[in-house]
Length: 272
Image (cartoon, rainbow, N blue to C red; front, side):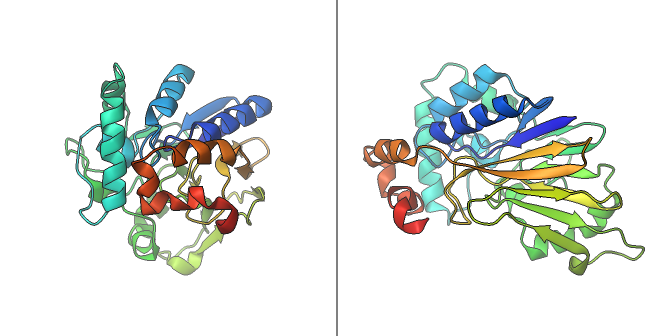
């Protein structure tokens, strides 16, 4: 069984199209979207419309929920707030867009895996409204704080996005309470895909990286993941796409081209 994952599209329709063409060549049995269809780039109408037409199982990302107005951002995230406000105004003219974002579930579970935008250990309690504080990043402190819950988590595989840095976190089986030394981190090298063979006694938390950026590891390529349960392998893909077209569209946007976080798109030849 082959299952394909991608997320953090952030309005980048060119990167999204490259990923779609990629999974159509692979022909997986199942495909899941890990959220953040919109936000950051000022073209959320393009990517939301495209994802809706694909009718894929999709979870809500923090950007999706902020653009839909469910909760405000951290006050120090000025660029992100401006990008969210821009996309919120853009999508308010698209029939059904906000209702669709509101309808996305925070998580999807199957027999073997949990699928969500960030972390199953930081979700709001049942009946509690999500907040931006439920979408912090997976640094050492956050990872250390959920090791006990991860060890006893009923699903062996966790697939998520959010951090924009593709990686496979492997929690090695241990009789004692695990610590950070019991985690092996597998990361793809710049510009290259990576395949690892799964160990039967380990648990895995897969961060898929970002399709559309911003690329926090400095690699301007769309990221996705394939889990082959028959071969017991995970592959993290780096997929090229036409950056020149995106750069042209972004440079012509008088508002968002001034956001500091988006400047690397306009200067990608120097930053790659």
